[in-house]
Figure 1: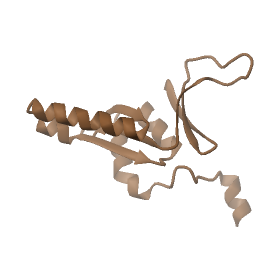
Figure 2: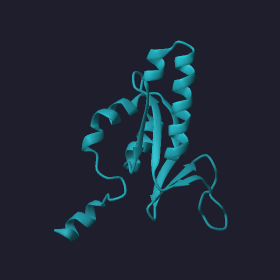
Figure 3: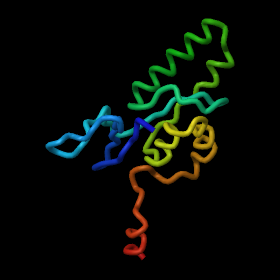
Length: 128
């Protein structure tokens, strides 16, 4: 998987893992930083079309749906789904790395934890 999201200080950062980390800082340059994230995909195949800032992704999906409907491809237009919000980073990365995973994400969306409030297993022990 070349692209990967990471959650840092409450923001989603998108990295291209093919790029080498900086020799000075040891960090990779991020491609995107956003507070919320959206992913547009085909509901039938689970294929990811676009991901990133929700405003940009919603705009792209609306334009694509309008073009497809104008071309008479109503079913294809209706198959474009956009999911946005504070999604768990591991689920986002699975969508990018596993072909068709977005369909599984959509089915489990109501049961997914809030993406920014995830705790590490050690934190659960401290809270108890």
